[in-house]
Length: 184
Image 1 (cartoon, rainbow, N blue to C red):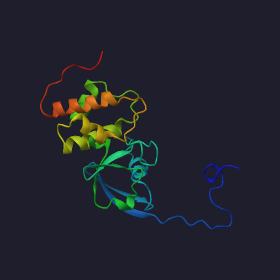
Image 2 (cartoon, one colour):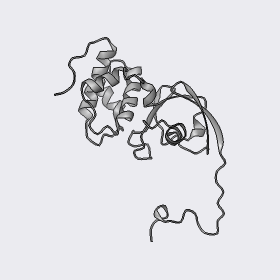
Image 3 (tube, one colour):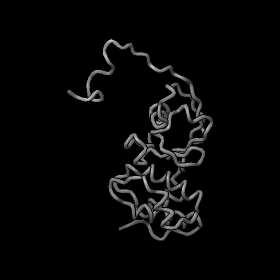
Image 4 (cartoon, helix red, strand yellow):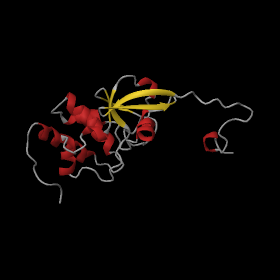
């Protein structure tokens, strides 16, 4: 017999189903106000993706361990798959789409210059975690980068390129010109 999560039975027989009541939440995401009607326990990730249509934030593991779903809540990097919408309150939310729509954020420039991503799946979470790091530490050491990025998993193991991208972004933010146009 399959465990309940894999069975076709959604609820136990003879137990009435009472869905959680919907509530209306008004969120500020990337500087814009959005009203959504969802249950209070809906994770922020699904509100962003399904209710607002911002699909840059990725679902990875669903338990907050991989970092693919990282967004900023009042400037702090958080795992959106674990945060119920009822806990967001009046917080400012920034997603990868809000980092810089024109792609001119120092991290976006460095990522392109150094060809950091391979498959790219984790990159939104990597960029959001890295941008929070650079905000609090504009010139991070290797140890600071390693500490901040721990828990952001990369399927392609591009950790050295990610670290180099963060260091290059710090240089770009400080006014350094591009070193080259990418890898050959």
